[in-house]
Length: 171
Image (tube, rainbow, N blue to C red):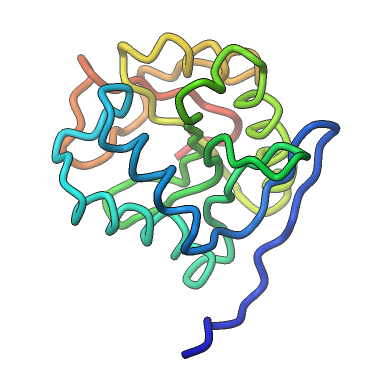
């Protein structure tokens, strides 16, 4: 069987490459999603596989999705990109770094490259961040996003546990 063919752009920064996912990327993604660092409440291998597929399936449906963040030496360090499932009121940019890669500026660098790529493609862009996600809040603020307490939350989200940081536009 061959993989479906469609274009996922490759983005490069001084230290990172944002690239299309491969099946081989799943093990690192799964390890992160099953760890306590993930905000995933249903931590099962089946759920993680579905999330992996959904994070990258956006490229097929919407022409945007997530990239694998890779250091220039070829080591995957996380994921970053965009989601707009039916239960999100507007497009969302998210990022996650795998264990051992935090605190080096990789999330900010990757998210900045993704955000800049999307600037002329999306009318609005937010990040839905867990209220306890102090590192993700710091990344959003370094990117210039502003907390928007008036924004509509994703279906099922609570204002006590989910914060909205707006990069641009309005819902």
